[in-house]
Image (cartoon, rainbow, N blue to C red; front, side, top):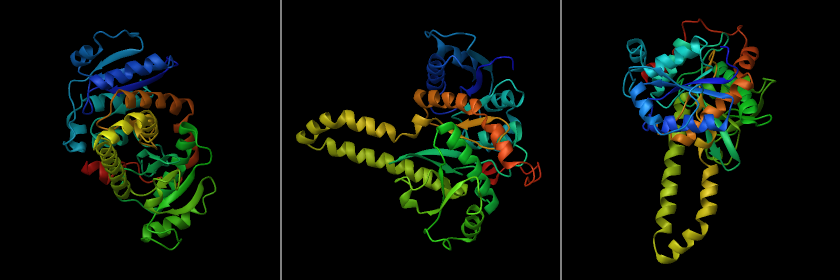
Length: 352
């Protein structure tokens, strides 16, 4: 790549709000930063319609044709193999071939995971590539890792997650010396299943992370740790419970405000402050969830992502590249503990 700008291949066809919100997010991002170039991957006709009426630099917003779309319900491994001209496959090949620095999609999580591992490829020395999801807490944010890629892990995998998460949270999000916590059913060292007990013993001896011990689930919303370690089964349950609880609480607050005239008047008075507080509790403010440990950057945004989340994710790609996160992970992990190269598709990805 001759271009000094950060080039992002953006799946324009993935997600509930494609291509309109996806394209809008790209337009907002290039308006915010001269350092960004976006390749909109997908159906040229539909993307062109979404661009109609907008003013933009054609050198920084370009369309890359892809005739197929991988739907959420499709088995991801088969879809990646069969739909060679899908927006997910075409976009990730751009990263693999050095034509883009990053790939972003709100589409099928399973397909993005499988594509990331078999098309972009793992860094040598990385045994598993986890998804690191940002979740809001009362103290700011936390990185939940793994939140969807590897349902079955070994203790040494959690150590690698901790190292990669530390690099990401420190250098992309800007949290100095992030606290690493192991999600468990108690804070005592001997609590939990065999995985948790063995992982604890390994983690406490790792010098380049700030391991603080076990963290119970009730401490997560209160910022009990900056990095929350677990397998993807536990992580995905926490993530979805988190999202569902937040929606339920917001619904109850709205219902309470609308219950009578006095509460409606009160709602008008507190609305600006409440809106600002809730904004800080939105994970979309920090962009999507990166698949860490790949040779290039792959980020999965929410399937319901709107323009704001897409914009923030694209801006995150610039920081990720500027901070040389891929190179830092290569240095931190090295090849000595790597598993065989053909072990690159997790059970979670295979199952979708």
